[in-house]
Length: 206
Image (cartoon, rainbow, N blue to C red; front, side, top):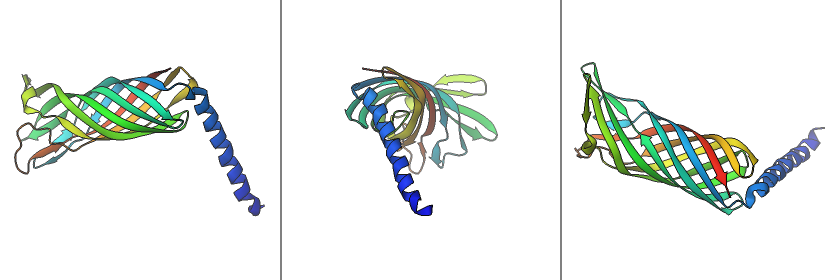
């Protein structure tokens, strides 16, 4: 009985591979994909000598354009509005900072099956759209205090791939910022963004 297990395992893996190949073949003629993203940004930034800092939830939305150059591989470019908010505590008083960026991720997508794919690549948040400060009941515009962000983004998509022209799902992505987002650079004082984004997606394919 045991001696047949490796053979049965290989047969099961072969069947899974064939099923995944058939799913991809169904939509394989669709070279282009246009995903629309809507969701939230859960921020938990890292800092050096900026204490204590805590995360604050924001919103994320945008769109992308993917090109499938191999049956399981695509190249993706996107444009996302992302709020990367955080709070600072001073003597027990919380002050909220709300920088919002226009972010451009460029990613490589690997799709082993129709219902899942993995993506990773660099991003550049090259435009600070807005920046506010909320503390003591006062709202202050401080857009000029924030600098552009850049880093690495990665994640995975899970969804429904039954219709070759329309896919819906959930994209879980994580931004790992490499830049200090403070416009004025002080030695040994930095804030680097760390953002988790659960995004509902609707994708058109052609």
